[in-house]
Length: 309
Image (cartoon, rainbow, N blue to C red):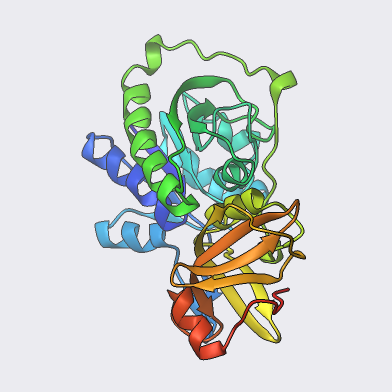
């Protein structure tokens, strides 16, 4: 099949590779424009753009695809049977979505209509869901509202973080994509039940700040959800501390939220809301590498009764 691929970040690459491995022709790839990145603000290509250049596949990088007539003409010239969209990063107009014979398929990491939006994996973990999945659906003008071609559920593993879960979902998603394209003529897409929709708005960097007034379980879910980005953090005095790993532990006695209640070989025990406790096991002080929480307490001279905020 003649397929135009839309994608930008590294996690879109397995889908592009899967299409190529399955023998599909990719005459054109749409990806985000080159942008300044890193401390030096050097102009950087998207991972998909670099991969396309290595393979000699032509790319198109419109800044606003909704208003770019040249981009639309390049799509028409490519004459796709199908558009495949995997983390492209722009809202596409109907003129692009419905141009191919089979329109446009999008891969979404939730069991739609649950968790429509930009951060479905993070919100599923944050809310303590026990399962999620991958949905392959037809794009339309709404936000993740199109008819469903196929989906596959999977349990969320205990202590699994967002990075680990996304990698598993990608394995499922690539298999689902190739299977769906192979049988696309025989699939009858089914509409979503919009009354059951929930939403997963974009996660922002400041969302990572830990509120110790929340329960230990909620904080544990936050740390899983925000690893590797934007990460979960708090402060000891003026030092920013990134919390990498930890777990809920039984509470022994009272404690104000954010107060250190115990320091042991296992880590740093913190009082949380509802008289619950969270044990920090791995921590990363600002400007340093991640380390065992016990090792950090020795250097920083943390003691029970001191406050994180």
